[in-house]
Image (cartoon, rainbow, N blue to C red; front, side, top):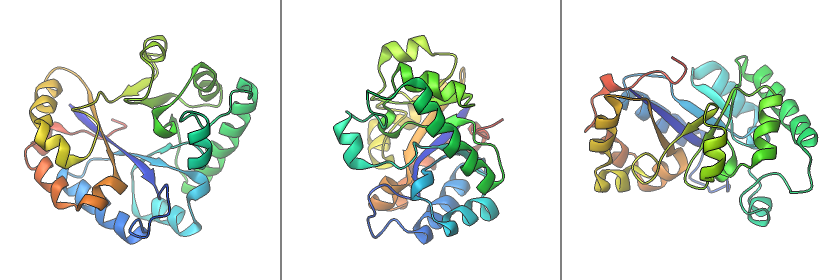
Length: 223
């Protein structure tokens, strides 16, 4: 079976096209494409307004993951993609994570049990901090080291590029739909999208891509 992960709610760079109205359109389109199944949505607490939070609470039933705390682009660039500076201890990172996880969970009135590191960059400290902060799993992707994925294989939710991670126009060109359908016959596959990327290229690409995959192959992310 297949599950879908979506990153970057409400936005990461403040681009004018990445509005809540645009996300509503994306959300509606994606749900139609995957047969109404619940997907995993990476929410950035410090970028989320009260209106964003009320939308998540009252208008969606997504599985909510915490996509870092603020997705500060300058700090991510300085730290090689890692949100947390190298001088921070596991305990200090855990404190930051716990506070943000609790606040987000309380605000949307549902559990937040998956940590989604910005840019998929996570090291041993952050993995241990996430575990002790109450996260049951964390997502990984193309930037995640293979060593960490091996060491933490019981906790990770991985999407393997180039056929399980990317923009739907590129995924369709690569024949990713064929790969996904084949893999979904024997194992759990996680397809990772970014709602901002899909909005930038136009949602027709997403419709065309998912039209190649039977909706019955998708399942709720928390099933």
